[in-house]
Image (cartoon, rainbow, N blue to C red):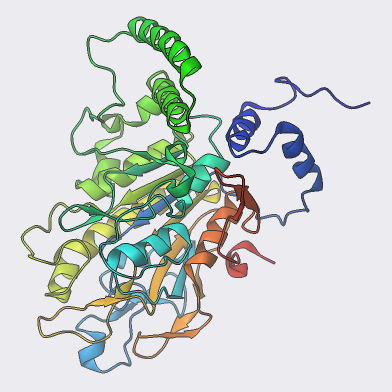
Length: 462
């Protein structure tokens, strides 16, 4: 006898997946059939309940972070020395003393490469796992862009505990002139796949997030009444107008309403509920408090939070914002960039560990590329997509690992080159999305989830 299929037979999360996949043309019978035919997964598949991506925009120098080159000539290795970590034989740059103390939790990829030297397009490659058609700088987002990793996760693995399945904060990524990078949203899948962009300043408490907080005069009862009226108007309007844009608008309105009615999600924004000690440990700066907010969001059920390194703080360095250290590389890394990242990153990993959340939370620290082996005339390092480092922790990936290597100069991959597609496949695998699977685009065409990406066996097993 076949068991009945109905709301009592599937969890809320499964019904959310049915709804999301139905928009892609996959019916409930097709979904169930696909589940029956699914191959057995290795133990690491779906081990992560959530993921936090720390995107260090601008491009951190591999030499001064996770891949020091003590045997390189002085003009290449720079003035900083390597230091030992908690893992014998593993060394980081001396600018990361706190991170060195949690190295036993980390897996570091030293052979990541995009071979693109432009912020926005190398960034799009890292954020989507798909190599962009254009490798030029300042390519704006377009309707044919590939969906970001965060968009895929939010659409294909929605949270069953929070209306915020996928979040980007505290701002989007853009070049000078506010030219937004491609690869940050749902791309050709449309706005219903967009991660929730939360423009905010977590240093300000109580925090205000435009469009996501109730005004003081708005009670829950009044909000419900307005929502009912809006639904009635939408119903009459949609009977005469049928378009994807109208459908997407309704979905976005529903998401906003669910958020306003979710006590757990709204409570996650209340950083003032954290102790002064933990807020201080994360760092009293925009990046540190944004990472603390990310931890609170995953605790509240958000599947993926991407924290972008904010642009504030480097405006006095003309033409060299963020980690884009074209001038005074050593001074900027020593005085501003590495101290903030080092303490915040180490605190996040240790905090998750102490809370028993590290085994179910994947943490990824990456940028769009690295920096040139040679310093320029201004004492800086320029764009370098040929090789750079990415650090991961949690979700059972195992600590104390080095994956791949760069050459003696830190200029090219020497062993085990890793592509963005492989990193994306690893993230998808750990979050329970088959990297070799497909989804249907709005024209009902099957699209591969990754660009032939293969999850890294060193992190997921065989």
